[in-house]
Length: 67
Image 1 (cartoon, rainbow, N blue to C red):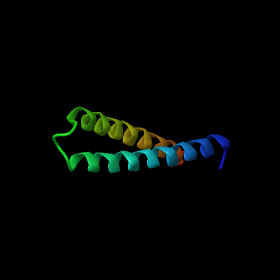
Image 2 (image 1 turned 30 degrees about the vertical axis):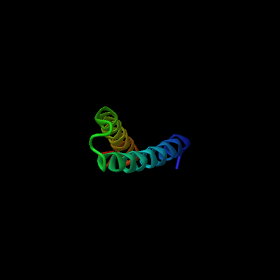
Image 3 (image 1 turned 120 degrees about the vertical axis):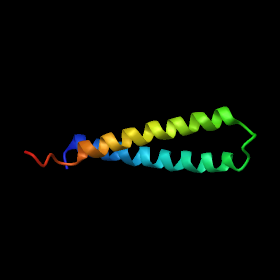
């Protein structure tokens, strides 16, 4: 594995961990739906953004099969 791939793998692991943390926090907030809807929306948007970045990194790590 090259250094850029190693860096991407490390970044991927960090993002996956943050995604799990956001999921836990969102679930906790959803137990009390009248608490803070704005915060809940922000967390969900961040979770989706992170999911998109995770998918982009995964596609960069997968070797090009057409080559």
